[in-house]
Length: 218
Image (cartoon, rainbow, N blue to C red; front, side, top):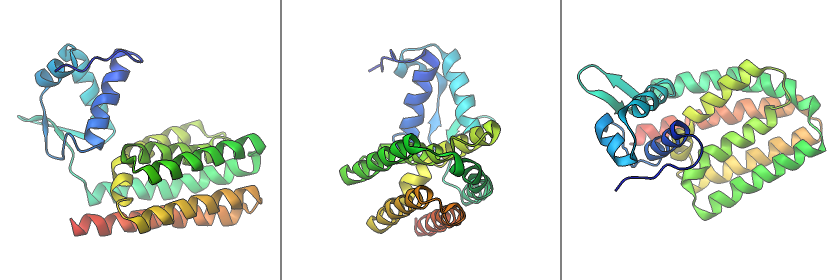
């Protein structure tokens, strides 16, 4: 059955559909994504499918291989090390620039993002974890006048999406993530910027370590 793509632009809707299918595990790691089959499934021509697959390759979700075409990327220790090393480098820098400029409206947004995250975890809405995590982090950084760094971090957080779902597969990890996010918001509200930056760095480092443990266990 074809999936009707009516929202956003055609290419935007198509990449959202295929990205979510990968992140949810419907297209598992190692799955070959044939352009003709995808075009038929989503009721489009092969041209937008090909463009979407190249974009997903740039996001790290797909690899385009000789003879095989597009294949869903495996969960990779090398990618975890690369993505999280960049996050540890860039996100504290963004927070340090943004934090002094956050106002009451910004904190209201942060409280809302945290509440959305907590509710999604309580409801077991696994598909939303990565997006809500990214929304919360970017809300902390949005006052930084560093558009290129923000763009890079937004892309890294999107790449982290399926790793976030994997890392939050245990109750202990979910509780820790919620507690650390709450502590970050509290420190920022109290003006304890250096402490908030240190906690953010530790938070990202801990997520990386948890992910490597989960990946080793698989």
